[in-house]
Image (cartoon, rainbow, N blue to C red; front, side):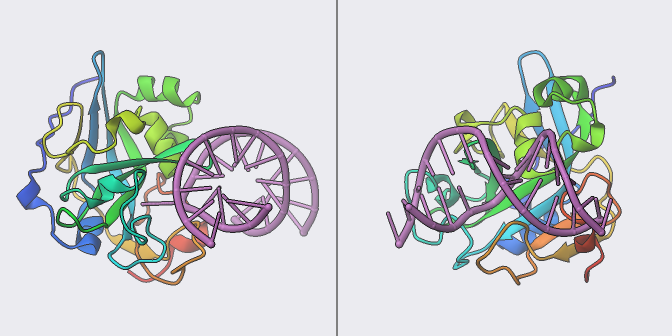
Length: 204
DNA sequence: TATGCGATATTCT
DNA sequence: GAATATCGCATAG
């Protein structure tokens, strides 16, 4: 397969506001360069965890687990949840302020054979649909916690290979606290978006 | 399509 | 001891 040419996103291009960043990242590219292969996917679903958000991991202040959320925007926060899944966030505010954007789903672009191996399935739609599957398909774990996605040579953010379609928004998935807030963003009509069908016909 | 459940580890109460 | 920003499988409608 031909290599996709992807320009890096520079930090000044990243919106300063958490919600703005969550919308901005739809249609952009997440790249993980491995020694033997490039894994890349188009971001189709995100969730914003804003300042003062009781559902956010940063809400109670920095701990050893969530400290990366307090790094400058563009930094990676990787955490382990439910004893089985890793999830990747992009820190979204100034250093010292805890907030981030959870990357929930990708449309696989490159390195699909490797993603299939990592995920143990050949079902394209299931390779990176959901945050835990996304991390597994992209070979992301705690070793990448805290890296700067604007400068790191392995894991980084790139521009869109194709413009984003219409962006929808909905409540976030899997929360009990702050459950009403419309902070989940996704590309309408994409089959690679996670969550129940009823969440993909809400307001834009 | 929806709902329910177990697995499993870290954090919080 | 309970909760958790999940997944995959099972079962029911």
